[in-house]
Image (cartoon, rainbow, N blue to C red; front, side, top):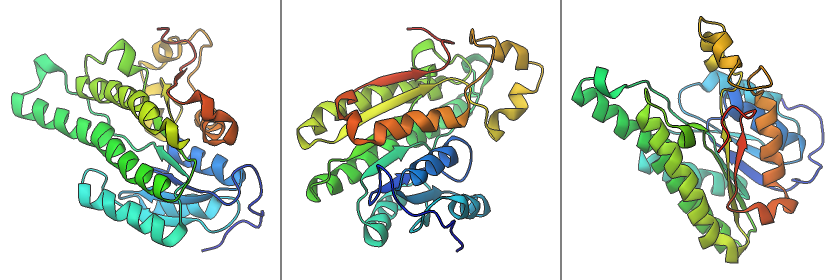
Length: 261
Protein backbone atom coordinates (compact mmCIF):
# COMPACT_ATOMS: atom_id res chain seq x y z
CA UNK A 1 0.00 0.00 0.00
CA UNK A 2 1.46 3.39 -1.00
CA UNK A 3 1.59 5.90 1.81
CA UNK A 4 2.17 9.62 1.69
CA UNK A 5 5.73 10.51 2.78
CA UNK A 6 4.90 12.79 5.70
CA UNK A 7 6.54 11.61 8.95
CA UNK A 8 4.38 10.49 11.86
CA UNK A 9 5.05 13.47 14.07
CA UNK A 10 2.65 15.60 16.04
CA UNK A 11 0.66 15.50 19.27
CA UNK A 12 -0.67 11.99 18.60
CA UNK A 13 2.62 10.45 17.43
CA UNK A 14 3.01 6.86 18.59
CA UNK A 15 -0.70 6.41 19.24
CA UNK A 16 -3.16 4.07 17.54
CA UNK A 17 -6.68 5.29 16.76
CA UNK A 18 -9.50 2.94 15.82
CA UNK A 19 -12.03 4.94 13.78
CA UNK A 20 -15.15 2.97 12.92
CA UNK A 21 -16.88 3.67 9.63
CA UNK A 22 -13.85 5.52 8.30
CA UNK A 23 -14.13 4.58 4.63
CA UNK A 24 -15.91 7.86 3.79
CA UNK A 25 -17.74 10.90 5.11
CA UNK A 26 -17.21 12.01 8.69
CA UNK A 27 -15.16 8.93 9.53
CA UNK A 28 -12.71 9.55 6.71
CA UNK A 29 -12.32 13.21 7.69
CA UNK A 30 -11.60 12.15 11.28
CA UNK A 31 -9.07 9.54 10.16
CA UNK A 32 -7.30 12.12 8.00
CA UNK A 33 -7.14 14.70 10.79
CA UNK A 34 -5.84 12.24 13.40
CA UNK A 35 -3.25 10.89 10.95
CA UNK A 36 -1.94 14.41 10.28
CA UNK A 37 -1.48 14.71 14.04
CA UNK A 38 0.74 11.63 13.98
CA UNK A 39 -1.64 8.81 14.89
CA UNK A 40 -1.63 5.43 13.16
CA UNK A 41 -5.18 4.74 12.01
CA UNK A 42 -7.05 1.45 12.18
CA UNK A 43 -9.42 2.11 9.26
CA UNK A 44 -12.59 0.14 9.91
CA UNK A 45 -15.15 -0.58 7.21
CA UNK A 46 -18.03 -2.98 6.66
CA UNK A 47 -18.59 -3.48 2.92
CA UNK A 48 -16.90 -0.48 1.24
CA UNK A 49 -13.45 -2.03 0.77
CA UNK A 50 -12.47 0.20 -2.18
CA UNK A 51 -13.34 3.37 -0.28
CA UNK A 52 -11.46 2.11 2.78
CA UNK A 53 -8.34 1.45 0.72
CA UNK A 54 -8.60 4.93 -0.76
CA UNK A 55 -8.85 6.39 2.73
CA UNK A 56 -5.83 4.49 4.00
CA UNK A 57 -3.78 5.47 0.96
CA UNK A 58 -4.61 9.15 1.45
CA UNK A 59 -3.59 9.25 5.11
CA UNK A 60 -0.46 11.09 6.16
CA UNK A 61 2.27 9.06 7.78
CA UNK A 62 2.60 5.30 7.80
CA UNK A 63 1.52 2.19 9.68
CA UNK A 64 -2.19 2.49 8.90
CA UNK A 65 -4.15 -0.73 8.50
CA UNK A 66 -7.54 -1.85 7.17
CA UNK A 67 -9.98 -3.84 9.30
CA UNK A 68 -13.31 -5.15 7.93
CA UNK A 69 -16.07 -5.97 10.41
CA UNK A 70 -19.86 -6.10 10.62
CA UNK A 71 -20.41 -4.12 13.81
CA UNK A 72 -23.90 -5.56 14.10
CA UNK A 73 -22.32 -8.87 15.14
CA UNK A 74 -20.77 -9.27 18.60
CA UNK A 75 -18.12 -11.78 17.52
CA UNK A 76 -16.98 -9.51 14.68
CA UNK A 77 -16.60 -6.65 17.18
CA UNK A 78 -14.42 -8.90 19.35
CA UNK A 79 -12.37 -9.94 16.32
CA UNK A 80 -11.94 -6.31 15.27
CA UNK A 81 -10.48 -5.23 18.60
CA UNK A 82 -8.32 -8.36 18.88
CA UNK A 83 -6.91 -7.70 15.42
CA UNK A 84 -6.14 -4.05 16.17
CA UNK A 85 -4.42 -5.03 19.42
CA UNK A 86 -2.38 -7.72 17.68
CA UNK A 87 -1.43 -5.76 14.57
CA UNK A 88 -1.09 -2.20 15.87
CA UNK A 89 -1.11 -2.15 19.67
CA UNK A 90 -3.20 0.19 21.80
CA UNK A 91 -5.73 1.29 20.92
CA UNK A 92 -5.10 4.65 22.55
CA UNK A 93 -8.11 6.28 20.90
CA UNK A 94 -11.50 4.83 19.94
CA UNK A 95 -13.81 6.89 17.75
CA UNK A 96 -17.28 5.32 17.56
CA UNK A 97 -18.37 6.92 14.30
CA UNK A 98 -20.10 4.12 12.35
CA UNK A 99 -23.87 4.43 12.41
CA UNK A 100 -27.14 3.48 10.76
CA UNK A 101 -30.11 5.70 9.88
CA UNK A 102 -33.52 4.52 8.68
CA UNK A 103 -36.84 6.28 8.31
CA UNK A 104 -39.56 4.22 10.02
CA UNK A 105 -42.46 6.48 11.07
CA UNK A 106 -44.57 4.70 13.66
CA UNK A 107 -48.00 5.25 12.14
CA UNK A 108 -46.95 4.38 8.59
CA UNK A 109 -44.79 1.27 9.16
CA UNK A 110 -45.94 -2.34 9.54
CA UNK A 111 -45.30 -3.63 13.04
CA UNK A 112 -42.72 -6.24 12.02
CA UNK A 113 -40.77 -3.72 9.90
CA UNK A 114 -40.89 -1.03 12.57
CA UNK A 115 -39.73 -3.38 15.33
CA UNK A 116 -36.94 -4.89 13.20
CA UNK A 117 -35.64 -1.46 12.21
CA UNK A 118 -35.82 -0.25 15.80
CA UNK A 119 -33.76 -3.24 16.96
CA UNK A 120 -31.23 -2.79 14.13
CA UNK A 121 -30.80 0.89 14.91
CA UNK A 122 -30.24 0.20 18.61
CA UNK A 123 -27.80 -2.59 17.80
CA UNK A 124 -25.58 -0.60 15.44
CA UNK A 125 -25.87 2.87 17.03
CA UNK A 126 -25.80 1.92 20.73
CA UNK A 127 -24.97 -1.72 21.47
CA UNK A 128 -22.00 -1.80 19.07
CA UNK A 129 -20.35 1.39 20.39
CA UNK A 130 -20.97 0.22 23.96
CA UNK A 131 -19.35 -3.16 23.26
CA UNK A 132 -16.37 -1.58 21.49
CA UNK A 133 -15.95 0.84 24.39
CA UNK A 134 -16.03 -2.12 26.79
CA UNK A 135 -13.39 -4.01 24.83
CA UNK A 136 -11.11 -1.04 24.20
CA UNK A 137 -11.40 0.31 27.76
CA UNK A 138 -10.39 -3.09 29.15
CA UNK A 139 -7.35 -3.09 26.87
CA UNK A 140 -6.49 0.50 27.85
CA UNK A 141 -6.66 -0.26 31.56
CA UNK A 142 -4.62 -3.45 31.20
CA UNK A 143 -2.02 -1.57 29.15
CA UNK A 144 -1.87 1.43 31.47
CA UNK A 145 -3.06 3.66 28.63
CA UNK A 146 -4.59 7.06 29.40
CA UNK A 147 -6.97 6.69 26.49
CA UNK A 148 -9.77 8.53 24.78
CA UNK A 149 -13.19 7.25 23.72
CA UNK A 150 -15.12 9.62 21.46
CA UNK A 151 -18.70 8.83 20.45
CA UNK A 152 -20.33 10.51 17.45
CA UNK A 153 -23.87 11.14 18.65
CA UNK A 154 -26.53 13.42 17.19
CA UNK A 155 -28.69 16.44 17.95
CA UNK A 156 -31.55 14.00 17.26
CA UNK A 157 -30.97 12.66 20.76
CA UNK A 158 -32.27 15.98 22.15
CA UNK A 159 -34.90 17.21 19.71
CA UNK A 160 -36.54 13.90 18.83
CA UNK A 161 -36.72 12.02 15.52
CA UNK A 162 -40.41 11.42 14.74
CA UNK A 163 -39.67 9.62 11.46
CA UNK A 164 -36.68 7.71 12.85
CA UNK A 165 -37.46 7.05 16.53
CA UNK A 166 -35.03 4.17 16.76
CA UNK A 167 -32.19 6.43 15.67
CA UNK A 168 -33.11 9.16 18.15
CA UNK A 169 -33.46 6.66 20.99
CA UNK A 170 -30.11 5.03 20.19
CA UNK A 171 -28.24 8.34 20.03
CA UNK A 172 -29.83 9.48 23.28
CA UNK A 173 -28.63 6.25 24.85
CA UNK A 174 -25.16 6.83 23.40
CA UNK A 175 -24.96 10.22 25.08
CA UNK A 176 -26.04 8.72 28.41
CA UNK A 177 -23.51 5.92 27.95
CA UNK A 178 -20.81 8.53 27.38
CA UNK A 179 -21.51 10.14 30.73
CA UNK A 180 -21.73 6.82 32.58
CA UNK A 181 -18.42 5.62 31.16
CA UNK A 182 -16.77 8.95 31.92
CA UNK A 183 -17.55 8.40 35.59
CA UNK A 184 -16.49 4.75 35.53
CA UNK A 185 -13.23 5.27 33.64
CA UNK A 186 -12.14 8.62 35.04
CA UNK A 187 -10.02 7.04 37.80
CA UNK A 188 -8.03 5.32 35.03
CA UNK A 189 -7.52 8.61 33.14
CA UNK A 190 -9.61 7.44 30.21
CA UNK A 191 -11.68 10.39 28.99
CA UNK A 192 -15.04 9.64 27.33
CA UNK A 193 -16.83 12.32 25.32
CA UNK A 194 -19.48 12.69 22.63
CA UNK A 195 -20.12 15.04 19.71
CA UNK A 196 -23.69 15.88 18.68
CA UNK A 197 -23.79 17.09 15.06
CA UNK A 198 -26.83 17.95 13.00
CA UNK A 199 -26.70 17.73 9.22
CA UNK A 200 -23.18 17.31 7.85
CA UNK A 201 -22.22 17.82 4.22
CA UNK A 202 -21.23 14.27 3.31
CA UNK A 203 -21.91 12.19 0.20
CA UNK A 204 -24.69 10.42 2.12
CA UNK A 205 -26.42 13.74 2.83
CA UNK A 206 -25.96 15.17 -0.67
CA UNK A 207 -29.28 13.94 -2.06
CA UNK A 208 -31.17 15.53 0.84
CA UNK A 209 -29.24 18.80 0.78
CA UNK A 210 -29.60 19.20 -2.99
CA UNK A 211 -33.22 18.02 -3.07
CA UNK A 212 -36.48 19.88 -2.46
CA UNK A 213 -35.85 20.01 1.30
CA UNK A 214 -32.38 21.47 0.85
CA UNK A 215 -33.19 25.14 1.54
CA UNK A 216 -35.17 24.30 4.69
CA UNK A 217 -32.34 22.09 5.96
CA UNK A 218 -29.78 24.86 5.45
CA UNK A 219 -32.11 27.31 7.18
CA UNK A 220 -32.17 25.20 10.35
CA UNK A 221 -28.93 26.92 11.37
CA UNK A 222 -28.67 30.71 11.65
CA UNK A 223 -25.38 30.29 9.77
CA UNK A 224 -27.39 29.19 6.73
CA UNK A 225 -25.34 26.06 6.12
CA UNK A 226 -24.63 22.56 7.43
CA UNK A 227 -21.45 21.36 9.09
CA UNK A 228 -18.40 20.32 7.11
CA UNK A 229 -16.91 16.90 7.92
CA UNK A 230 -13.63 18.68 8.65
CA UNK A 231 -15.30 20.62 11.47
CA UNK A 232 -16.37 17.40 13.18
CA UNK A 233 -12.84 16.08 12.64
CA UNK A 234 -11.25 19.18 14.19
CA UNK A 235 -13.28 18.75 17.37
CA UNK A 236 -12.46 15.05 17.44
CA UNK A 237 -8.75 15.87 17.26
CA UNK A 238 -9.06 18.15 20.29
CA UNK A 239 -10.97 15.52 22.27
CA UNK A 240 -8.35 12.91 21.35
CA UNK A 241 -5.52 15.05 22.70
CA UNK A 242 -3.79 15.25 26.06
CA UNK A 243 -5.36 18.60 26.95
CA UNK A 244 -8.92 17.28 26.66
CA UNK A 245 -8.92 14.98 29.69
CA UNK A 246 -11.00 17.40 31.77
CA UNK A 247 -13.67 17.48 29.06
CA UNK A 248 -14.59 13.91 30.01
CA UNK A 249 -18.34 13.40 30.23
CA UNK A 250 -19.09 16.27 27.86
CA UNK A 251 -21.62 15.98 25.04
CA UNK A 252 -20.66 18.82 22.72
CA UNK A 253 -23.18 20.33 20.35
CA UNK A 254 -21.70 20.89 16.89
CA UNK A 255 -24.81 21.75 14.92
CA UNK A 256 -24.54 25.46 14.17
CA UNK A 257 -27.16 26.38 16.77
CA UNK A 258 -29.70 24.44 14.78
CA UNK A 259 -30.82 22.96 18.07
CA UNK A 260 -30.28 24.76 21.35
CA UNK A 261 -30.86 22.76 24.48
